Length: 346
Image (cartoon, rainbow, N blue to C red; front, side, top):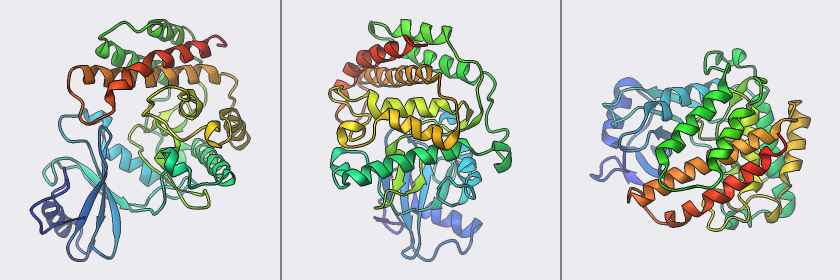
């Protein structure tokens, strides 16, 4: 870890300025010098493990460089995590929010560090036997059902989003993202978008939706119990089936796609229950009507295809950093085909 007395700081986190801010505004919060390490970077919000030698916290801030404030709103993320603290949804306990850019160059918030493991790669999954994998998948699904069962009014989130017209806005948002990333012909993607637009479901139930609910956004213990749900930057009020449909895509829809960097190590081919079993388990614990789930799964394929096409476009412009981007564009067309397949039952 980096000491606050060193000249080198973790990227995006000036520990000396952070320490001064804490001493001035939250006296007694820490004891002694601060150390920190970056534990999650990239295009998502940056996550640091912070300690004073006695206590451990997590600090979250937006990515470096110019970003859209609405996409990386620390206040919204802090608010939803704080609101869920006394519910059955496991989240870290929050401590403070700083909305000023002057301290570390961007707004940030601090919450407890929760011990646990994320399961993302086949190597990490290999540490679990088949029983543990099943238990982990079922606990994941039950936690999602528990989230969707929370009355937003009861936790002070009645104004956290605009449920009316939510699906139409979501489709428009990702259609605009697609228009901004067009650099080549993508067979079927316009047909998929138009088919989704023609068949948008009527407004269903309203819930707090996570926006990117998947296994590697959870922390679990060795018994498969979910210790914390993480990465709430896309949370809002909306249709809970958008979470479930996207989870189905992550769980099984990406299997068999070569060079897949999005979701690895999950699904029945890795010893987990099928997506169909997870959906049944979700219904048993939520009572939500999933008869129209095909639309939401198709939309999940469209959303991920658009995200990956945007990454491919930036790669062709030489604007990506790191390795592994050269194959992202190859995933888009197979995703579109699967999305179109799901629209046949709508």
